[in-house]
Length: 120
Image (tube, rainbow, N blue to C red; front, side):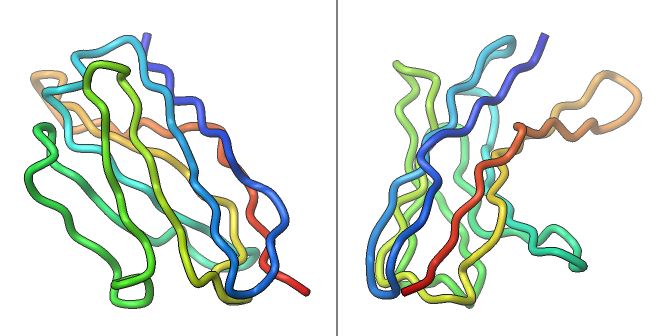
């Protein structure tokens, strides 16, 4: 079955950097766009970045443009999120996600999430 396992979260000071990883299994990784979302308490989960299956195209939320970079290694079935110049408002639980069509509908798959706290 589809599995998405995030790692790399933690506590970082403002201005610092972190790299998140998401190891995927159970599907044809290179055929799927992959995304990172984040969620803070009391708010809806919001898109951070998306990358196409071949890695050739990316999109970012305006709030992270120029600071975050999404990338993927299709040989390792892993997607990454490099986060630089972190701000306190980046504090959230970060989720890896993909979606697949089962012949009838699109289904969203999520990892368990990895928390990031940006604080001095």
